[in-house]
Length: 299
Image (tube, rainbow, N blue to C red; front, side):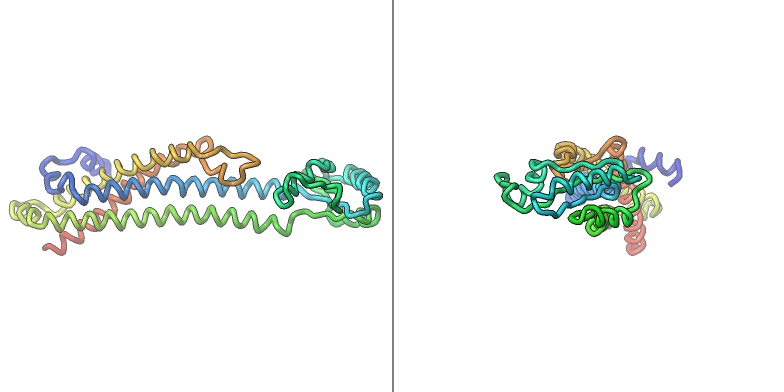
């Protein structure tokens, strides 16, 4: 869009604006659709960004973490735990290793067995948290040494379930992006219907304007300007309400899980501000196409 055409779109023409009814069904429909779709777009954008952060965090943290289980009789568990810790501390590429306390292991099991679990009465293996350094350790070599010196040790580097979690988070991010595209498409379709309704309702006025020498481009501009500005205003309100809703959601926490981090962080708070002008652009394109087609049919 050229600068002159943009200025003309914003400033408008008082005579041409009379062609489009300032209120009524089409105005209400355009404002409502633009606001509702912009509101949903804010949450779709928040979902997409949060899923991306989650995928990156899981890919980074889970790739660097492993768990060592000591499956040994109670009388041998302490000795094997100490032996395993000694091996881990001597292994190049292991940044840290620590054994979970009984309280920590009971807390891990509490979602399944309740908080009153007596862990001493169950044959629960001893867990050791292993954090990989940079560069990492040789997993095959570490397993062979543990197998030789600590028979009850089993090293789990989370490979089996790490990849599906990361893939699920990334798929959720793609779903958010697809949702935004669907919202834009639905907005264009609804605004096209509203523009067609307004053009049909003003068919007689359009015929009179043509008789007095008005060009179709002049008539179309009146519709395009009015619907574009309506979409811009409705989207601005919807984005404002959506950002308030996202801001009121709980902040990210380790205990709260994924949904507590469904929001914007830092510079990302500026991204929803792009939705109103993009919505206006969608309305401009949809109304221009509808107006040109409808005016061509009325010829």
